[in-house]
Amino acid sequence: MAEQHRPTFLIRPCFQQDLEQVQLIYAHHVTTGTGTFEHDPPPLAEMEARWTRVVSHGWPFIVASPTRDLTRVLGFAYAQQFREREGYAKTFEDSVYVAPSAMGQGVGKALLQDLLRQLQDDGVREVLGVIGDSANAASIRLHETLGFRRVGVMQNVGRKFNRWLDVVIMQRSLAQS
Ligand SMILES: CC(C)(COP(=O)(O)OP(=O)(O)OC[C@H]1O[C@@H](n2cnc3c(N)ncnc32)[C@H](O)[C@@H]1OP(=O)(O)O)[C@@H](O)C(=O)NCCC(=O)NCCS
Image (tube, rainbow, N blue to C red; front, side):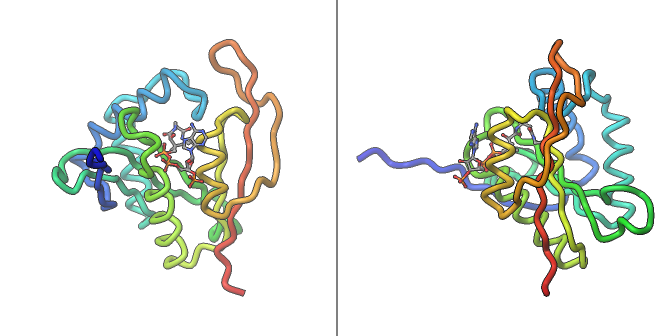
């Protein structure tokens, strides 16, 4: 029987030197997919600004790296407060992006799982997945498999590639009642 080669990776914090690869992964999804409604890939300086905003708040920004080469980035995830007003302080939104060559191998699930663990440790109560495109089966399944439930669909609120696109809202409670 042929030996099964499963990629082994670990989840670690995202450092500044990872951002070049983070930018490339995100740029791929901006230019080819509907998971994000950005039309033009943000340059590295803008990705650095986003990363700085997240980490300076103490919010999680993590990457997955192959255990054999910790300088490589297979995917990244971060969380930010859903809206800035004080009342939203315990409600966060997640973002997860995996390199095309690493998709479908459990990287996205491991990233989101780790993000949820960190958010729970930080006392966050509710986590929202705000998913571009109701046809985004991978992201919807990723969230379902980690206990998110679909709480709403905003119809035709985005436009990309000459199509009107829905946004699916999924929610997972971390509250320990
Ligand atoms: C969505 C995304 C992050 C998922 O990451 P991934 O590493 O490919 O997913 P995983 O291999 O960890 O799979 C997670 C779950 O989704 C399922 N899944 C993965 N790809 C799928 C697909 N194309 N269609 C349906 N289900 C899929 C897996 O079977 C798994 O479910 P299971 O635990 O029930 O078996 C990744 O596909 C991606 O980067 N997509 C483009 C960007 C995007 O839309 N990001 C989300 C923005 S909200």
